[in-house]
Image 1: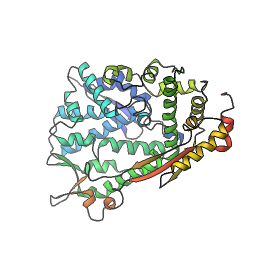
Image 2: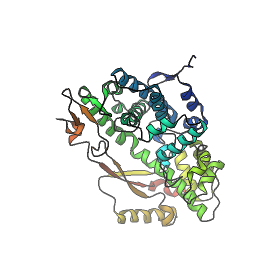
Image 3: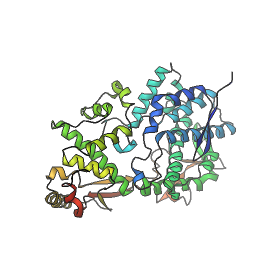
Image 4: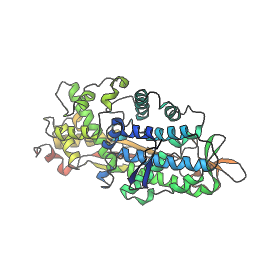
Length: 416
């Protein structure tokens, strides 16, 4: 029987081949297609205008890298059956399917107590029922229960194809060249030792470049102070809407799906509402924000106007935490300028902490296979960059506040 074959033209890798009927079925499913409507990088486009790619782009890119990684391992004599190959490709295709609107930005805000990984598994299990058990092996690999551990490590590990794609893709779309990694060389150097994924000695410098690129991308892009501020403003918008609802003040979203999750503030058994969740995307949230620009509540309407018009809060960064007294003083001063209460001004004047660890050898390790057959963690390699620098967490404390010059007019000017 002739197997259908299609190619997708990707701006990062060129042509991506899809050549298995079950992979077609997964990609065609509405749950998967929903990822077109979820931004990969939330509000990073407010700083890097080209960063408008979505979760589906990333998923297909990770699938492409998985295909290349499996082909490389098979060429080195590592046994991977056709069933394992298809299952691994499906597992990586679906690894991020549980992301909600604006990806990480609203995680734990719209649906509390459930991480996107858990939602991804629930959706995979739902699809498996629909596909009559054809995703059993993909789920087993995804959850790390399959006996060939290296297949799971390709999906979730220090050197997984998920990270390789998002670094490559995000640096491409943002134009931040510091994030460029030698993904093709890393893939060529992958092998398996005692059932686990390792990297040949020749790839040490490429691995170091990968780790440095990760660190630079986090601080230059993912945790950029303006991106961070916009995402916290989004969280505050949802929080304010919920606070008003709790107080009995009507706040309705144009989307019935978003309205459902907004009005259910108590912990939900999300497995009972999975179909509703799979109808939720960025469009629902942005539609609501544009509608709430005209809400009679000043806090909600101003927050929404500021985000839509990119009139964001100011941000200060420093190594030490901002003192409680400093924040209290700033809130009191701004409350006088705006006429808001201290509780209300807290939505506009707040602090927090951003943290990133580039490589923690106490977690999943990057093991290097040397020519003499010995195995060492990358942090134990002589002169390795991460030995002293990249294994320690880096923390930055941020303080977001209203511009005192324009603060007063924001709360007296009618929306449009």
